[in-house]
Length: 224
Image (cartoon, rainbow, N blue to C red; front, side, top):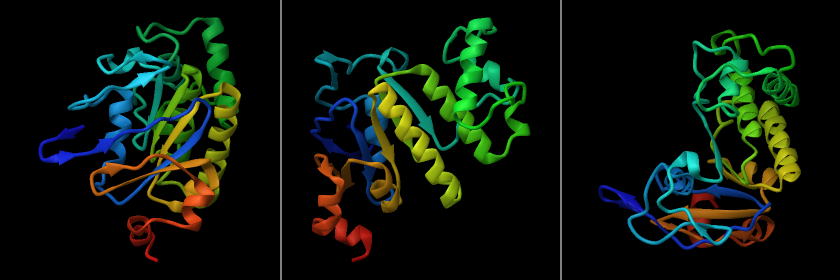
């Protein structure tokens, strides 16, 4: 997969239900890998399979992936009920009573109970991140792709959000991919790590084993 003169080779097998961190230097291709999995970037060659089904040509809305980005992508003119309702009603129609109840339950799950009537501009950055996470939870897809969604948060709040993601991933049995520049996030959250560097996404390795005996490229990234 590539764009312009950038190329990233990836030959990975990722199991359902696993928590996988994607780490590596800035510009190495971590987000490119997630974009390809989620359907925002088409591979130059090869295929993307899920459950034996070829999804390489499928658009993002037809893939089994719920994505969360650092920018949150909440619509500023809609309150949280309408924003999150888009996960249930992509046509933009006002959520019905049952859908509103689902939205309110998702907001409560991320610590935003009672805030469904507020617009994003009335929330702190941390609250906006929680709301965006609640929208991902509502989609209930078998893959959650998280591209540094909590990098702007303080350590305590970030740890809390990662714990919520961990619980939800376990509840749904979802494969969770977390792009992060912070090795501590990988240690705290992931069972496996995909290291991306020098144009290659390395196959996943168990987190503890990787950090106990990192390859040379990872040693350089970690500053060892």
